[in-house]
Length: 317
Image (cartoon, rainbow, N blue to C red; front, side):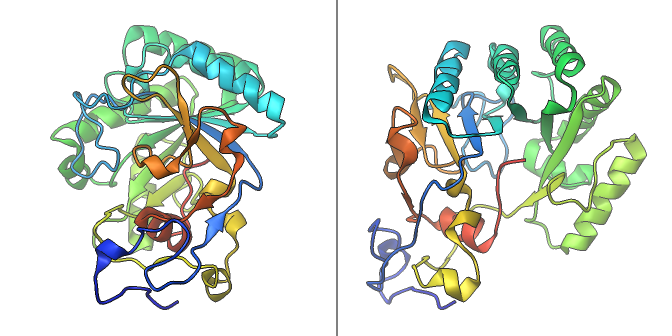
């Protein structure tokens, strides 16, 4: 696929929702098969990673804690709109910083959904109250609850480069606790290091074997390796012609099957955005309700190109 860059540079690209810098029709993605509704639990996190796309930290509260009753309102909307979704996802920040995380998961599971929680498995998850809640959820709902653990690299040194000294050991400690209560785990890693995918998966396989983790290193759904998201990296814009050139269809892109609910600091109520990757960009805020969020998404951001269309990645389980 040709790059649609112009002599005027990157700043012209991704400026018009409907037309590329070269004047071609920008690709869009309809919500064709809604399978996952995500909730951002808040951007506060117990750590500050070197390359966090959402800039989570102990100070970042641009997205505030969503409440269990607000989650329930959107679960009601799912049924009213007949989305036929199978999964409710929770991301942050660190979801277990939110004091209502266990209750939000419980309500979602009780409605019959699968639940996916993205966590670093560190101290917020290991508080006794949270541990008691997770034990109860695992006992009642089993494999319908999945915790996807952020393990940036299979080695402690490289993982700690991203998350801080000692973070690898604390995450492994949390994973061992989850293992012992029978919780279903998967892993999210990154591909920012100079190694092949085969070498990375071999490294994760050895890590899992050492600790007795029942996670398949070769399964992309259980060990998810995400490309690094840098908005300054030069990427091509996605035109309607790209689908045929790349032999892909809009149905394969994440925003065809999911939406995310966020609550902005100072907002009276939550809003629905196109996907988990773009919580701050106003052009991807689709409305306050699921009904308002059912329209097509214009692929007008570098993440749409690099991460979703060209990278083929998905945040869902």
